[in-house]
Amino acid sequence: MRLFEAIIDANHRAVAGDADAGVPVAEFAYELPVIALTCIDPRLNALFPNVLGIPADQFIWLRNAGNIITGPLTSTMRSLALACAVKEGREIAIIGHTDCHVRQTTALQLLEKLKHLGVDRAELPENLNEFFGMFASERQNVIKSCGFARQSPLIGPKIPVHGLLVDILTGKLEWIVNGYEVWRTVSKTTELGAGQATAQAIGSLGGMAKFDPGEMKFPDLKIGDAGGQKGLGEIKPLVTNPPPPAPRPAVPPVIPAAPVNGPLPPSEWVRPGIPKKPLPPPIRPRFGSRDQPR
Image (cartoon, rainbow, N blue to C red):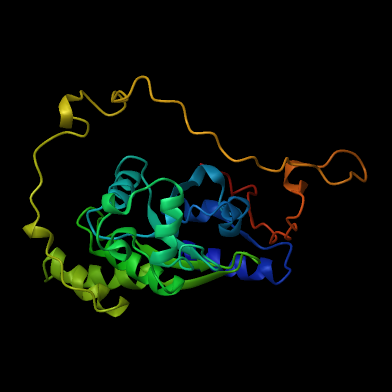
């Protein structure tokens, strides 16, 4: 059994009510840590990494609006590549969620929202759907993003790229793209070039256009050299005295519900007029005598 096979199994058992469901993380030490790209939706804060059943220190969390990847050489792919190379991430999971507000927003609605924030239409790209990566299906968005990640010359062919969808109410995971199957397809096609093998492997994910990494040219620079910087971590902010932020609209105060046996933790707080939704049961990593975190 591989790591995400154990994760999906434990997740489904926990959602079904099995209080003993868990992932023996020590058995998968060579498949950790996991890099996850999810949406920025704050409702996900209470779900991860619990729904995966792995400890927080083995969970590298990247987020953007709609967990969207728009190409194999975008800034999101740069972050995924650095998470693999610098933070030694072993597997990538692109995780969408149900009831995604990005999917529910049309280009016209987005224009209105941006206009309300003082953004001039003339300053925006002509094709809003393409620039913002807006989508009509959460599942198809996950599949498309997995395709770009698997095609990217920045991600080695030995890194499995999984695609999942999490139910925002129950925490149940749906395994949409099995990264192990793609990895096996790539690894068995040794007689082909890396770009051809990857394109062949990803063909089952949506028939995306072939991408030849050999055509890409990169400058021989170290990370952080661009712009005269000396190294990673030494980049200084360009604006030393930024203008004060615009005043934010008033937000109803957080009021704890009436305590029963003492004060309640923040997870039990509610806002007036906003109903509190039950959280799915967490899946906790299992550590025994032979299951110790590394």
